[in-house]
Image (cartoon, rainbow, N blue to C red):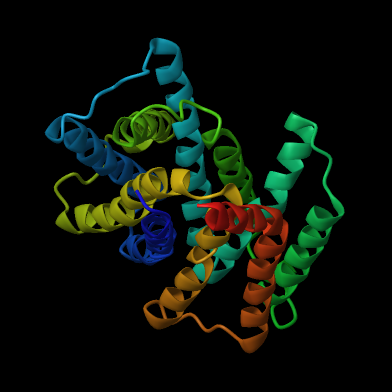
Length: 300
């Protein structure tokens, strides 16, 4: 696959995830619980991805019981992110929930420091500072009292950032040689198992015959659990880590614009300033990867 196609796949994958809050919010407004949405989402993703694996007869090369377990464990981070992120959307506005999710930028740097013993560079520290300033403006703290916001929503939002940072941290290290279709299907299996265990008590009362629930769940599954991991799996290997991370930032403005246009959530100029600062922090933190990517392109 060419580099340009890789860029397109990553942009489409990240952009599609930005539409997820719309279906989640509509699901909550229709009276469905956090467990209902998560279970249906993962079940649909499980059926679709495994169906595609068998349809295209994807070969499970380089696969063994140990790697299967690792991929499923990695998938549990996706399940946790869905639970925490959708929980944040339930208690907060979709725009604030996505901004909290994007704290994975500096949390990922912290993970690198703790687990890989990579001390943050001055550039990384500067990107953290810019991120936090961006959050200050994007969260609309100047006009909305933090005290009035549900604490559980803020906690869910930060937990989603931690679990998402954990997923990004391990995704580039686990079974990268496995075919993308198979890897994504095994990953969603781990997510489904985690979600079912977490919401076991909700299963008896799950309205399986409710068509609206399947529509909402299908939208969440398609934009949140099927397209993003698949498109990233296809596109990211053809790009540098820095470029892939920068391109994934498109998720933030897409989520905010869709929340504004479809969910009628107001977004102020100061909030947009905060969004620009957060995206600038991602560029700053990955500037070395971008330079390396440009250098490789010149050589080819």
